[in-house]
Length: 114
Image (cartoon, rainbow, N blue to C red):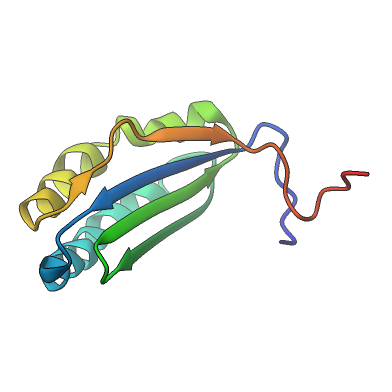
């Protein structure tokens, strides 16, 4: 990791599970939701990185890195995420693990921990 993160950086982790036999449906809903989520998320201040990964074994994760906890909390109020995408993905078979948690970053491999 070469990025220098602010001391106040926070990781937001959202996890969903689904029946692996519904992978195709969930994957299609995930790709569809990206069409409106990407622009909405990119407009939010404080975003450093955002990743979405989906496994055919029945889980999906959204991992985002924000400059502050306050900015990470924006995702809890983003209509495109909490209403539109959540409904689309849940209709396809995904179940989100609640609560969605923000984690203050305590160290990275690039930190000098000596």
